[in-house]
Length: 483
Image (tube, rainbow, N blue to C red; front, top):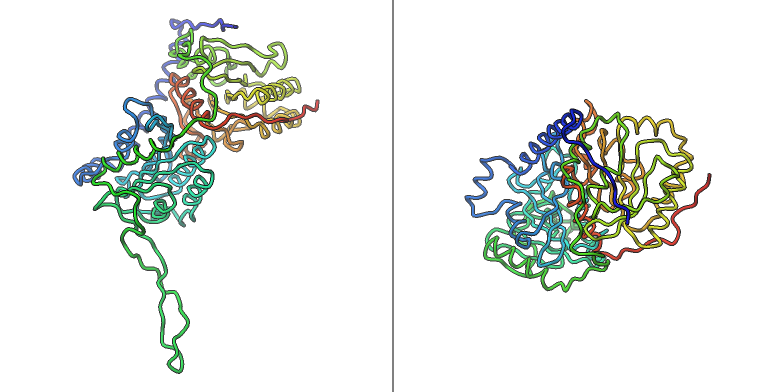
């Protein structure tokens, strides 16, 4: 057992300045979160409640087990875009009848729950998380379909993802609370369990209607298709009819209870876990530090790993990369933390070897990616040939990957081999400086959420629990080092 020896003096001017900078960023993030929670605004929220209907987060809260956590995903999607913050949908992971589930809830107070490009991306990401981690999916549906200014409809992508879950034998539940059109209208038929709220739920589907005109010599003309019309009403029988929204959520919980669902991954090695020996408040200082400074990952690991216990791997080799073993909320984990320097063959060999060992022992990997200015300059000057074996290793690794993006550069600008393109199970970011004028808004979903650094240990623990719903299996061969 190797306990990290680290401490930060909270009385120094540098500490106070860094902490203050991070609190300012967190205040900006909180304002965006409040905008998402406000939905379509007071007028539409009041009207929605007056109809005896619940808001999306109220529906989620009533669905989940009492006092259980809810890990909301991309809550400020569309921030900085022309669409409302939150993308008119709530997605996340919560516990229903003791089963971790992905939950998707349309927000009908925002343009009737209209689906825009950000909505589609957010829902598809949630479905992808359900598929990769073998998590049952609960859809709380009420949507008017595609938003008018958003361009062409998503082309059935959401419906396709739901069909794939069913093919993979991941249970899906759909509760319909009101009028539903577009792709969402097909979700009840594609789900394993369908619940509709009596008197409110109806699907509006668009189909071309056959028309026959008079043909020559009194014979009927071939059938042609007219312009689409919109027949309203329930498109098919529900498995269960609920008397009201609360009853619909009760029936959804009942469905999940009967899944007889079991996790396939191993349970935590130790429970309850030993808390870190250092205060998570210090992470505010680390996160708010000047991005031009060199990052010290041991300071972060000491505040998120169980007991601040970290067994470093090859500490004297490839010193621009820190690798080692620890536990987080009782789950074994391997850590690769980039200090911000350029990778030489030594760092590449070290990383590839470590990833091979993690796959050999079926141990999940946490990539801590520092993206400050010094890191960006170092990677610009690096020989890309040195990184090729690492690209192979990361791409071929089959154990779960979690990524934490920290530093001064937005995740969409510094993803690298740890970013979205390499499909980590989860990717979260600490708040960074506001993106430069003309750069991509946060709504592009480069990550699964921007989190308060003090919540890092909790968020990663929830993610590790979720990935263990599926079997944790390593690859036999993940890469070859070529100096």
